[in-house]
Length: 102
Image 1 (cartoon, helix red, strand yellow):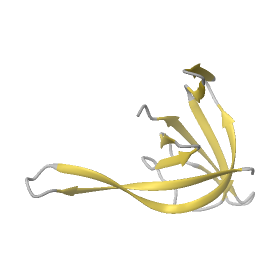
Image 2 (cartoon, rainbow, N blue to C red; image 1 turned 90 degrees about the vertical axis):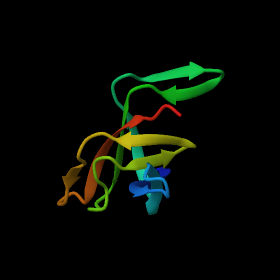
Image 3 (cartoon, rainbow, N blue to C red; image 1 turned 90 degrees about the horizontal axis):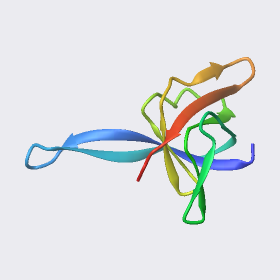
Image 4 (cartoon, rainbow, N blue to C red; image 1 turned 180 degrees about the vertical axis):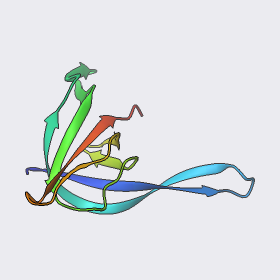
């Protein structure tokens, strides 16, 4: 597990005018993971390489990661698109996420 990520959770609140705004709060500030590229592969634009499909982050077991959370890795944000696969006996979870266009 040679990569470091941060995991954030969305908090929705209303502002003074009644409009909803989303703020991201850090749930896990530092987690070591193993990254595996899924379908889609990678693409290079403007000399920068990025994942175009899903990415699987394999990390130590925790019950804090949920569907809809955001992962920050390498200056990019990924949205957790499926419930994490939890393997308590092996002590790890697999989190599938997609790159968010920002």
